[in-house]
Image (cartoon, rainbow, N blue to C red; front, side, top):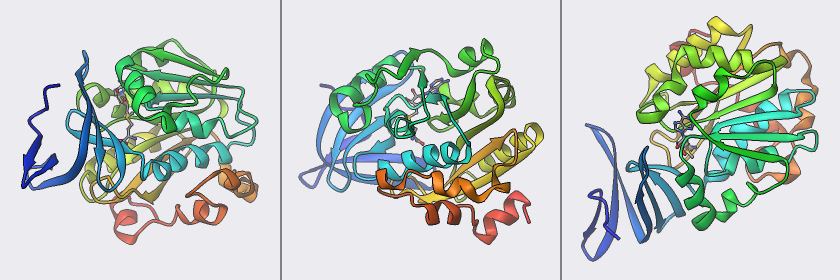
Length: 289
Ligand code: SAM
């Protein structure tokens, strides 16, 4: 197995260096490198880290780890699913590791989850090395398609109650998932009363991405909100998610009781409410009152 150049041996240990920008590099001490392959889209690596256990790394960037994946996967899934009064059909775009699909299946009203991931090899590697994430992808309610998310939504109208965009950072194949034409198609793919959510990055390291996402969704949806969670493995830790809703789900506080909190490790009803309380600097940057 050829180790990528961002994994080096130093002082008798293996280290993965994740380059966030010209100014920031994160070093991960590894126990092992389990898998390395180049797909037509990206380099897929699975490592075993000292702190967070196994991790999926795409093009040198840590996407998810066994140790803290539950925070991100629960927050991007349970909030929109609880806000919708009766989610039956769910679309997940990206998300080939399976963590978001696993969370969606916890909602008994959900009859079907369509997963559209561009890279079949990500899913194959996660099924092999991260079964705690990918283990529910064979559930009969799940349909998996390996296709570009933008191409997929082009052919879809009025089909989904909830759409979750679980994309990697806005570079490479995921860049299109942060652009206006894609969000417009996502809106058209929603049924009346539908809700979409996307991960909108860190306000410390990718503030323009967050601002742009919120602005684009403000232009398309009658109701938009941003919420956040601490994700230790993502740079800046404070991670944001932005919702676009075709109705105002916050008018009825009943959504809080729909959080399936007996099935979660991070989200509780109280925490769900609190996640919409934004730090002052984020409110200022987004121009929200
Ligand atoms: N939770 C992670 C994060 O915030 O960094 C992201 C999860 S990762 C599994 C995202 C997935 O999106 C990757 O597997 C990648 O292959 C997929 N992806 C990237 N661009 C895509 C596109 N245009 N259409 C569908 N999936 C895409």
